Amino acid sequence: MKMKNTRFNGRLIVIGASAVVLASAAGTAFVFTDHTDTSAETSVAPEDGTVDKAALLTREDIENYLYEKNLISMAHAHELLASRPVLTLKVSSVGSRVSVKIVLPDGNLATGNLFVITLTDEAGTRTEYTNNDMDGWIIIDNLEKGDYAVSMNEMKDFVTPASPTVTVEGEVAPVAVANIEEKVVSEAKIVVAEEDAAYGNVTTAETVQDTPAPETTASAPTETSAETSVQPVFTGWQTFDGSTYYYDGTGNRVTGWQTIGGLKYYFNESGVKSSKVGVDVSRYQYAIDWAAVKASGVDYAIIRLGYRGYGSGALVLDPYYIQNIRGASAAGLQVGVYFFSQAITETEAVEEASMVLEYIRGYNISCPVAFDTEFVNDVARANNLSATDRTTIALAFCRTIANAGYTSTVYASKSFLYNNLELSRLSGYQTWLAHYVNMTDYAYDYDMWQYTSKGSINGISTGVDLNVWLNN
Image 1 (cartoon, rainbow, N blue to C red):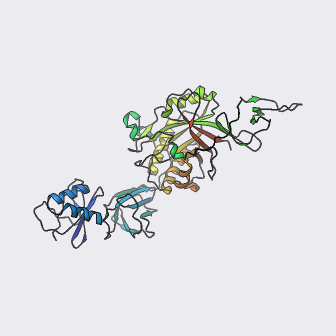
Image 2 (image 1 turned 120 degrees about the vertical axis):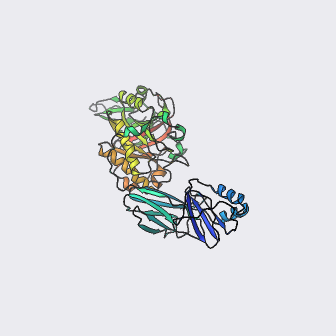
Image 3 (image 1 turned 90 degrees about the vertical axis):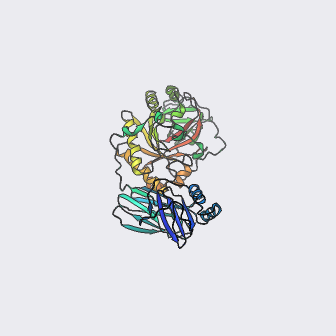
């Protein structure tokens, strides 16, 4: 057999006595059978199988080339391509772990097959790992820092995928990095629609249409002495010795969860108010009258400081951050911040935390600093993280924040907390739950609950996320 091939950046692999496969660096490939035409341009594959011309070919390019050079019929090219699925290796690394997914052309994992993956380190040492559970996904732990070539052993029923290279970071210190502001860009430098998902996407917080809680008529809290010879019948808000209570229409103190004036509160078993009312805001709330917000009964604000672009990975400062944190602070609200993460490594998470620490300097941050993790769309860079890797990234952020002396929390929806994070590893940090229902059934402890994205607060011209922060 004469082996003919186009010149392109990829590998030439013999997979049978009368068939070869060309796999490009982009992961595309084709198979063709023996032929005798020698009129087309040819090249002899080097011993290492690489081909030297830097031109990436798609499957369509290869089919057209073969057809135009009379090497094979178009129908036969389609048939051969369809008969051997082209696999892709999707490789990522967080810390000292490497994740290798073996993916079919339809995007699903290639389950039911015993694949063997080889990692080759910078010294040329090769180590094989077998997908014994045949789930199409291999996790490799405890690797040394460095670059590794990832390859898959040939299998007769599949086109062997291209071999990517992955960089293993190793252990990353949760300490703020210097000069992080040099990496931060303004929104003028990016295409916002391709980098920033409008915060408050209600689908991520599992919106459920429940029956609204009955509203209790609110009145302003009043200071009353508890020592009196005649016990009056109280109604509404009352404050005794620094503790605030709410009395229903029959003069009884309410306990547990209550909705009063459209806002949620929690009262302990003695009827003492044990929660604070909060909003979280970003550029999507535009200019805010913070004095009016404070007068509406809001105690605190969590302000978006910035985000990492879900396309490019750029670090971006929220254009309303400065005016929001200054305005909320001046109005007398407690303030905290959140960062919308798209980190895919621990190093990136530490960068995000470092950016936060740089831009909260000089402000009184008495509320938590939040790591916001959620899905954005089908192409967001962090969507494919495993729960283990996402948790490792969240920990890198939270530890960096905590090491600087601030309280850190992880924000996510109920299902995201259940399915996309390892909660036991995050037990040392607060949880900010997003669940848009009248009464959440979240099974674990939480510190803050975002219960709607459609709140109405004086001073804010748009719908706004409303939160309740438990004092205990």
